[in-house]
Amino acid sequence: MFKNRASKKAGLPPGTMVYVGKEQAGEATVSMIQYSEQEAEEVSVDVRNLQIAVPENKDRVTWIQVTGVHDLALVENLGRIFELHPLVMEDIVHTMQRLKVEDYGDYIFAAMRAMHPYDEQICLILGPGYVISFQENPSPLFDSIKERIMKGKGRIRRLGAGYLCYALMDIVVDSHYHVMESINERLEALQEDALEDYDRETIHGIHALKGEVFRLRKSVWPLREMIGRIQRSDSGLVTRDVSVFFRDVLDHAAQLADTVENFREMLASIQDTQLSSLSNKMNDVMRVLTVISTIFIPMTFLAGIYGMNFKYMPELEWKAAYPVFWIIVIIMGLGMVWWFKKKKWL
Image (cartoon, rainbow, N blue to C red):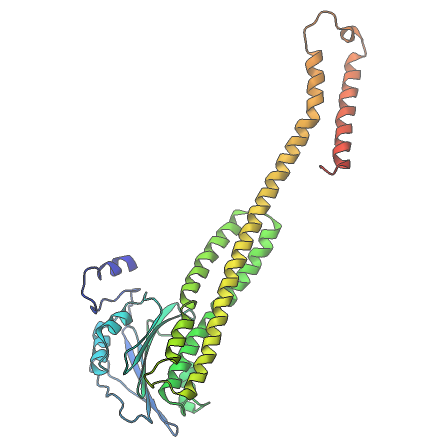
């Protein structure tokens, strides 16, 4: 599905809007919240007849939340209203976009990836007095932010659009922790299985986790550079008071990156443990086979001697020769087993 849609972009001019992502059956929705330090209200928006004015009162913040970027006409209308660059609109509808932050002077564009409750691309646009967020699926990801705005909890109403952008980015970054906890639990289970014995299920589990950790690393690793670029932006959209909070998100991103690297090392260690377990198992098998072969060497030697067709062999006419032969063979075998155990070879 993704390959077919991605191939449609081949040969098209830069800035051409082509939706690349999973099929979406539902309609796109737009919700808008406007708030100041004293009040907050949710404004109804008609998606079919989109009429949104660019905020002029910088003391009043407007948050536009778009769900469903498969609606190209909706994204194009928003781009026209807020004078977004065609490359920005192209990146918004390309849901497999790499993580990035771009400063266009009048606004900052950020493409991130939320891992919980859905693995989806989140795009944020921070402008003077407004923030636009784009999601692929309806989800409760930003519900806590809405509640804080409507109920006036914390400092979110006092610090403007820059703080709202920080709060949304913080939620997206923290969404990785749910996946981290799940991977950590599975890694602990794999470690126990790897120590017990070698089996195919453990190997399959290691390879499956490797793919998840690789995908997680792609989502986490660029976060530090992205947030650092927002902090260093000269656009004035992020004030010094808000920049301190972005530093906190930067710390979270660094912690996530370190955890992902630890996961990779743990996976490599588990795989080494599995290979060592397989090697030890093979060594045990070879040791047993070698001991058995060694025990039978002198027995085979005696059997070979008395199996020769010489006419004059004095033991052949001795009546007790056969039982004596077996007694000697058994004593030799038991003696060699005792010797191997004494040397701790068995």
